[in-house]
Length: 391
View 1 (cartoon, helix red, strand yellow):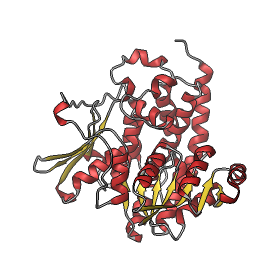
View 2 (tube, rainbow, N blue to C red; view 1 turned 45 degrees about the horizontal axis):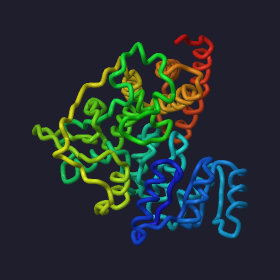
View 3 (tube, rainbow, N blue to C red; view 1 turned 45 degrees about the vertical axis):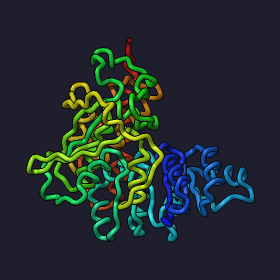
View 4 (cartoon, one colour; view 1 turned 120 degrees about the horizontal axis):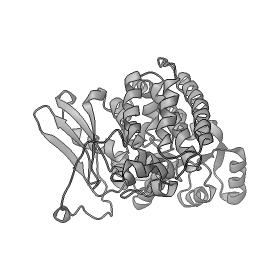
């Protein structure tokens, strides 16, 4: 019986994780849950899975939850302290880090420092603090199991092979909803347009990141640290069918890939059960029904956010944290109708240009860079919003 703590239980990854737990009650037990503002869903999860401790963002939310649950309420905490407590509970064997955005960094790092293995869906942990996280993992002897479908595919394609035999990692990307849309028409796309992902069902922020391909840029940075591979050995290919989830190219020319239907339960389950596999009730991949699998180089003019991610990785230090924070601010501004879609990259680029890169020695430097970038990016977004747009 593996005992789990789930950070971000009401998001898409958290919900899928709990569906797997429900399907295999003899293998997994939920000890702690954390969530943002979706108290209704969290209440349902608490009543079903009976965790001993939960945490939400605000004290007001915690009090509302206590009132709703009454005598059925577990220990309910709030704020960053509550997230950390839920991440570090001594009964937990593994944390599922599924909080979206930089908010997941502190509790995930706390879980690592307390000796927990981590099923990592929060890519921002490695994006913003990769050198610090990997150093802690090595020092404490814990393991990171990737949950992103691309990184899980690489992880699976490398098992049984030597790292010094790897030539390249190739991350695949669907290309999102605008893969074939003329660039001139992208100026006036709406949030509804950008949220309409052709293959995957994801949260709002990640869906926009997929549309800009910043999601893939963040995954490049994550892969650099997760697999200890130099950036020039990490490539991105657009693969619209989302069947080949990523590939590893070896020095002898062999290329090993992991294929499957586009469903996040597969990589989640493998992270939870490694080195074993769970008999998931998912439809099999119909290989005979596949008519073609295509791959293309990404167009950095159409997807400048991908190029910005490579630039931030090359800058090093605090630059990736700034990239990530500026992106979060820009995506929020777009979703709120404040800036056009194509200006998301402009906000990020302008924020990076103003940043004085510092080396990473401690998590506090990441947090300071994050706060600075959010303030700077908001100022840039306000300026862009003030110019208006004509569609």
